[in-house]
Image 1 (spheres, one colour):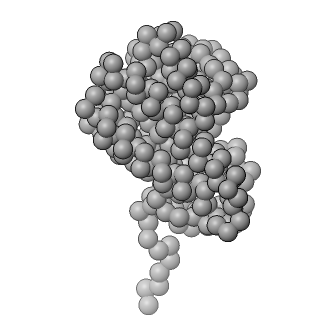
Image 2 (cartoon, rainbow, N blue to C red):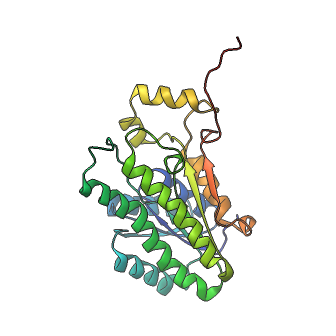
Length: 256
């Protein structure tokens, strides 16, 4: 039980990686404030946690609304007395050729993936400094470190999340707050099952040394480490959870 008595806000908790992290943190003793734009979905996540004997509440949050993010943190402190952990999981994907992405599409992806993560992190950090303790975990991506075809908006946003994570670590470390990120590779979720074509999946499997997609539970395990006491000296780190994708070189060579 790594997170006993800790209060954790998890954004994007209505499904996928965010839902898995909310369950993982709760199973390890944390009280969860599960938030998402999908109010019904995040309420279901909280109810499922409670049904398993955990502690959780839920709320609707548009992470792109700076004032709403501040209010959510204030409400959490009013209810539970503190905020110890923020898992910044809310995000959006996007595909489009570099020459075809519209300004509106680009701005939307940046607002959700970058601005939203910053707004939530800043609001949480302002409370965490009062207690001289905090864990902020952002979600980057392999796309933030290595360019992927037709990902100019998404890849750029995730590269920016990596930079924001490192900036937060620099500014907040002296106050006992660590800021790290997990960077998932391809993960088996309902969304990837829908949007990844057979060709996309085959190309990924060819270059991932582990030879498979990751699971949401594996992403949650990585976040759990960063959220706990064992990671107290880990700060500004980008933890790639990608089956070796970022580290890999050529997929095929000839011995001749």
